[in-house]
Structure formats: structure tokens, C-alpha cells
Amino acid sequence: MAEKPFSKIVILDFGSQYTQVIARRVRECQVYSQIVRYDTPAAEIAAMGASGIILSGGPSSVYSKHAPHPDPALFSLNLPVLGICYGMQLMGHHLGGKVEHSERREYGSGKLKVADRKCPLFHGLGASMEIWNSHGDKLTKLPRGFHAVGTTDNSEFAAIEQPKKHFYGLQFHPEVVHTPRGKELIQNFVFRICGASKDWTMGSFIDQSCEEIRAQVGDDHVILGLSGGVDSSVAAALLHKAIGDQLTCVFVNNGVLRAQEAEAVQRLFGDHFQIKLKYVDASTRFLKKLKGVTDPERKRKIIGNEFVRVFEDATTSLARGKKSKFKFLAQGTLYPDVIESVAIGGNPAALIKSHHNVGGLPKNMRFKLVEPLRQLFKDEVRLVGAELGLPNEIVQRQPFPGPGLAVRILGDITRERLRVLREADAIVVGEMKAAGWYYKVWQSFAVLLPVRSVGVMGDERTYENTIALRIVESQDGMTADWVRLPYELLARISTRIINEVKGVNRVCYDISSKPPATIEWE
Ligand code: XMP
Image (cartoon, rainbow, N blue to C red; front, side, top):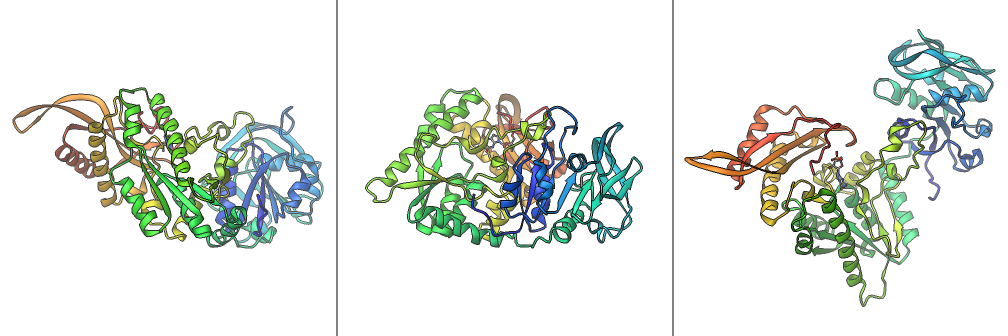
């Protein structure tokens, strides 16, 4: 990756589940941050042009056999360093202090008394603050030149400083929301101590990224598989801004899209943005393959494989007869997908690998990759999208699985069952939007169950389908809880589905959390 002209804070990852949160907090200060492995050589870090370094927390103990250690030359780079939790213990350990296993693990909220109000880390923060702890070991002897700038009931060295070298350590976690003023602490480090400049804005990212894309692509042509989701949409808009007609998007109708989806994507990207868009209606081809398949994994495989074939065919036919074939394939890969996770002591963040992501792109196609979003977190992608003029409808869109409605129809996928689910789903989305709930939740959708039950409609006995409503809140899709929607809204959704969708006589609300349930039913 080309070096950025932006100010930069480098974060060494020692396996904390919060490493990405630290990176996001720094970026919220409008300063670029980059996560690197804990053992990145100091010379490499120096070459990155960082304004300062943060050592993340981590699950290890500094004395344990497999504890991750940084390159000690890091402390001679003449750069400010902030060690958080394990990062602080490492700093203490490497610079001649003493770390001990404490009898009592300190976990949860606590109070920090600021011992030195002159310390720039605590500028403007008052005499005490609420903090969040999560550590077993603690520093019991300071290295030379350090002094305590904050204490807790349990620790006389909860915050430490070596002012000459600009080394700082925090026993607690300033990056988590349970340390309410932690963001200001991080701001103080980034601006007052590192002297970074506020230049990481989405406007400057777009300008820089367009230049890079042009430099990478030259006169060649780029192809992108557009799904209508946030990431591929923003990637398309950004590439179009950078290279205009050298970009061609392919949108595949796989037969399991939501109501009006294909039309909306064509309207927005083809008509409004005037992006070269190849619409491939492959629905019959997909539905034929899916006929009679009820196993969810098989459904996923069929859709994934078929997509690759259709995409290849489309690319070949687009390139036929043209001078310039597609040399590049663009993908909406995001930063969390590229960070090399450090799996230390069973860090859950490292174990949860996006099992769903990117939906199998042609592995054997000889494309070079363009991934203009690979430095961004999801919330930054949304900001870039808004800045590029994409409507809220796309930018704030809820996640939608690649295999589409296929994972929301349990059992057989037929055109008739797709119709039932599409109509029910449109009602859920419509009512959620009308009530102002759609953008407040992680996902809200309908699921068609393989269950029929008896009902009465007028004087008639019916034997019809059941729709389950799945409406959940979540931060990242890894855990989720069902939303306590107002009864009136649930009632309206249910009444409308039963009255308006032919073939449904019962609606249920799914009140399971994840875990142990998942968000999708499949
Ligand atoms: P589960 O059902 O595993 O879903 O709790 C977690 C999140 O992932 C989404 N999901 C997918 N996203 N391709 C995607 O891009 C997929 O194949 C896929 N399957 C599930 C799901 O909607 C939820 O937000």
C-alpha cells in the first residue's frame, strides 16, 4: 500500500479484542490509524512516517512463554508511545520496571484519581474519571524516569508518564465506551502529545484515493460485481469518480433478490450515476439449479458457484471484440477483512473470521485487484458514500446476505414461495421505515417457514404459510438481540401481511437472541 500523506498513528496489535476499537477512536479524531502486528520491526514503523505509536492490550502475561513482545528498538525511535493495559505492562517490563501477577483480577468499572493534572494526557479532564478495567497483572515498579499520573484504589500506577520521552501508559481501557471520557484521553495523546494533524476526512480520502486508483489503473479497464449493498455500491461510486467510463459494473439478478431490487440498482447506477452497468438476468438459471434443494449449505454453494459462472460469462461477453479487456477486478474489501488478526490466547476477535464475506469471486480469473476501501471501517465507508452523493437508502442499508432470499426461505425455493416472501418482506421494510425504526435496528426482515397451519378467513378454513419476523439490534452481527418493537407496529406489520399477502395466515415474532440463535434462520 502506498504511504499516505496523512498524519498517522500506528497501533501495535497484541491480540486485544479492542485493537480495532482503538483504531476507530483515533480515526474519529480525524487522524489516520493503522494496525500492524506486534512484532513489526521498529525500522519499518519508523519508515511508515508515524506521529506516534499505541501498544494495544492483549490477553497475555508479559512473563509467559509465548507472550508477544515488540521490537525493543521501538522505544528508541523518538516517537511518543501510549501503552494500553498489556501494552503498558510491556512498556514497563522493557524499560526496567516490574510487572507482577495480582491476586485480584480487576475487571469492570472503576474510578481513576488524576495524580498530576499537568500531564497532557489528562488535559481538560478534571480530577477524577470513570474508567473500565480488564487486567490480571499490574505494574508494581516504575521504570526510571517515569512517575504516576493517575491511581485507582487497586493500583498506584494506573496511569504513568515519562515526559521527556513522551511515553505514557494506562492500566485501563480508554477506547471502550465504559470509559466515558476515554475519547478525550485519546485525543489528548494524538494531538497534544503526538502533534498529529486533523487531516483524515472522507473528502481528503476520496481525493487521495482517486489519485491512487488512476495511478494503479492507468488506461486499463476495471470490472466490478455490484450487489446493491453498501460496500460494492460505494466502491462503484468511488471508482466511477476516479476513472469514469473505464469502470463497468455487472449486476447479476440471481433470482433471489428482494422486491424491486434489480430495478432500483439499475435506476440509481445506470440512469442516475451513468455508470456503465451490465444487468444480467440469470434468475431462471439460478432457480433451475435450486429446484428441490432444501439444505441451506447446498443452497449457498449453488448460488456461489453459479454466480462465478455468470460473472465470468458476462465479463467475457463484455470484453469480446473490444481492444481493451478488463485487467482489473474491483472489490469492496474493508479494513477489518485485511487486518492480519493476531490470535493470542484465544482472542475471540481473531477467531470470528467473516465466514460469509466476499461471496466467492472467480479465483481462476487473471485479474489484478483494485480495492479502494481496504483502509476503511464500515462507518467510514458510509461517510464516503454519502460524500459521493449516494442516497441514504444505500448508504444506511441493512446487511443482506449474498445468497439473498434463498437463506430466508426454509425448504423449497419456488417462484410462488419467492413471491410470498418478497411481498411480506416489502411490508416489513415499508412499515419499519414509515415508523422511523428501519435505520435504528441492525436488520428487519421476514422469513418464510416450511410450516402451514390452519386459520379462518371470513367463513373459510385456510391452510396457509407462516411468516416469522426477525428484527434485531447488533453492533457487528456477531451477537444480537431481538428488538422490543412497539406492539402497535408489530400489529400493523402482522395485519398487513396476513391481509395483503396471499398464502399467509400467520405471523410470528422471533424473540431469540444470538447466541444461541443466529440472525438468519436458513
Ligand atoms: P448469522 O445468521 O450468522 O448472520 O447470525 C450474521 C450476519 O451476517 C449476515 N449474513 C451474510 N452476509 N453473505 C453476507 O454478506 C452471506 O452469505 C451472509 N449470511 C448471513 C446476516 O444477514 C447477519 O447480518
